Length: 106
Image (tube, rainbow, N blue to C red; front, side, top):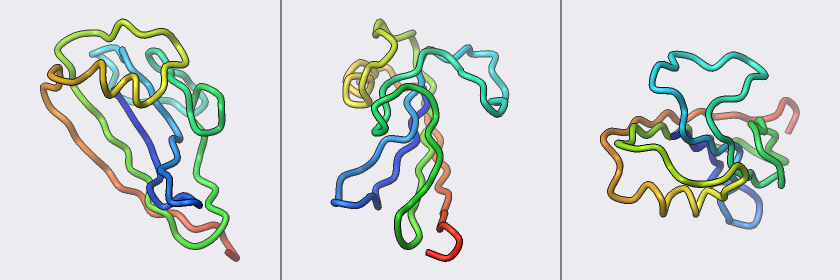
């Protein structure tokens, strides 16, 4: 299970850049422009990864990876909130990476 979100988004609401679940346990890397598992809805109103593009200042992008003890019975396009509810009590381990990004000249 993978979530990428930006808590520094305009308006004070965390913006979801990527939600992916039911990723193959054998996955070792994610190729550029590829899809993995089942992808959920992003703040862009689409599924798939939407990269960073902050309108101003430097933003933090949290990449959260979860190992679950089961697959999730959710459809493509499920929201981050639906995925988080479905994975409650199912988390075996987790990792987090925070990346910083600022658009040049902004």
